Length: 331
Image (cartoon, rainbow, N blue to C red):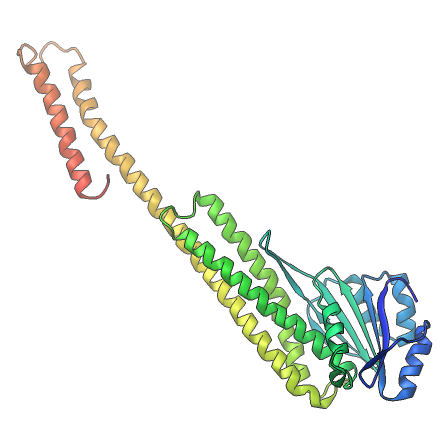
């Protein structure tokens, strides 16, 4: 088998049995037994590496193209010989507080499951181990794999949403602290970056609602009819996670608006203080300017107490303006 195949096994009555090295023979053996299916897991295959799988399982060229190129929205597509499902697992890095997404494609067909993974955001290893420990679930065939993978992806959505909620509460406390989160541009940039993380999450979770609803209600080929309640449960969890993320997005918009309003109020306060000090400085400047024009006929030039009287007038006027601005909250 190609090296890009990270795992391959036949599951008969829920128990793992190592299949033959040839994919065609393994699939024929799984179909011949009637109670088995083949699960092939691949990681970022190239077109040449995936060509053998495409030929052996009869996968549709359009689905294969999507699986190889990645960068797809979550979706569900039905073809004659297989079902094609795209999921976008989400990964949260606690050190950098960033959200990244991977891609996970599943081909479901007659007695086979092919999973193609792109990126690091994938729960497949844990899902396979958990399913192998629960043979009563694996007895339901490829549908059990589709359900287990979808459930793991959506459950991780909820975990990431909880982590983002904690980060948002910390940011909210920082913005509304007495210091106001520090310099305006830096705080606004952090809020915007966080909003981008939430948007990345929404792009992964939002479009998945339609495929999950379809699996929960419609008669989809290659999916066991008794699995509908399980996919309905996954859809409920997805709805809760998406609603939580939407709430985060709205709160971020409100926090950003509040932060910008705070900056506007501070700028108004600064402008009022500057205007008040400028007004107080203008009075002595005006008086000194008048008496500095050196005209012969000016009032009280020959008076002995004229100089201290003018200084006292300027000081008194400035003090009166200071009291007025202080009372009105400008200083």
